Structures are given as C-alpha cells and as structure tokens.
Length: 209
Image 1 (tube, rainbow, N blue to C red):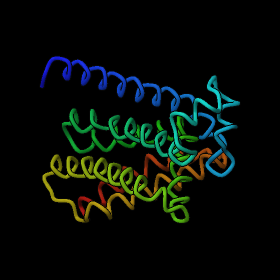
Image 2: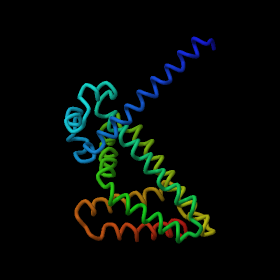
Image 3: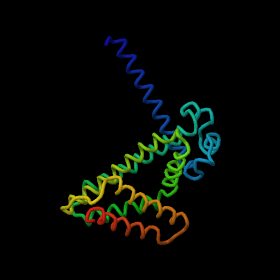
Image 4: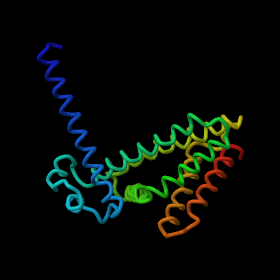
C-alpha cells in the first residue's frame, strides 16, 4: 500500500471509529427511555424529547427505531454477559460459584429490572417482527453460552458432568429469571430471595440430575 493510500485508510478507520463511538453515546442516552416505555410506546421522536439529542441526529446514526433498540439491547446484554466471567474465573468450589452466581442474578434483577424488561419485550416482538429475529437470536446465543460456562464450571468443580444440554440449561435459568422479573415488577418482596434459591437449586439439578 502506498503512503497516500495508507493515510486515507487511517483517516477512514478514524471516521468509522468516531461514527461508532457516537452511536454508542446515542444508545446510552436512549436506553433509559426505551427501558421505561418499551418498544411499542416509544418512537425516535419521543427518545429525542427525553435526551439531549435531536430527532434528526438519531435518524442520521440509526436507520429507524428497530435498529436503535436492537443496538441498545445488544450493547447492554454484552455487558451483562461479561459480568459473570469473574465468577467463573475465581470460584474454587461449587458452592461458592452457586452462591456468587445467585447473588449476581438477584443483584442485576434488583438494579436493572427495566433493562431486562426491555430485552424480554424485544424478544417477544421478534415473534411478530422479522427484522428483530436475527439480532435476538444472536443475543440469545451469547446468553446461552454464558449460562453454559457457569454450568460447565460448576460441573467441573463438582467433579461431575452436566445432566442436560446447553439449550435446556439456558431455558431453565432464563425462565426462572423471567418469572422472578415479573414478580419483582409486581412488587413481590420474595422475588429476589426466590430467585437466589431457585438458581442454586437449578445449578445442582442440571449437574447432578
């Protein structure tokens, strides 16, 4: 590559990086409004009214509401997946892993319930909106892999093999979390403790059968 071409390539990469960074900032600003109002009740114009960004700016960086919402949820779920890596890396006995994972699940439910509600909203919408399905499937896959890392590490520490498949383990723990979310949003005082107990029980069940 010639020097002028290399210089143009660097400029092009900087422009792409700057564009992507701007998209991340816009998504961070929009996420709270989306989480509070949900997919059906939120438009780009309403997001603009509740953030420092103009309607035109949002339209410049995101094609439509679908692209913005999927970008927001993808960014948030990537953060969620990473928060459990430390638990896998540091656990020395199965009981420690089960306790820390259960506490982390209850913690994120309590602190970020609206964000998780947005994810389930988006996943439900994908049953009707084909434009969501590929992104939802990709996010789902990343969450399933995260759950399987937890299950596999628990099994390793327990000196056993998982008694179910990765999709089954994910379905069980995701279903438990969604039910806890519904109870928590309905004001149940038992939702968090029930989730902690359920997570510990399910980890034992999917490993020990």
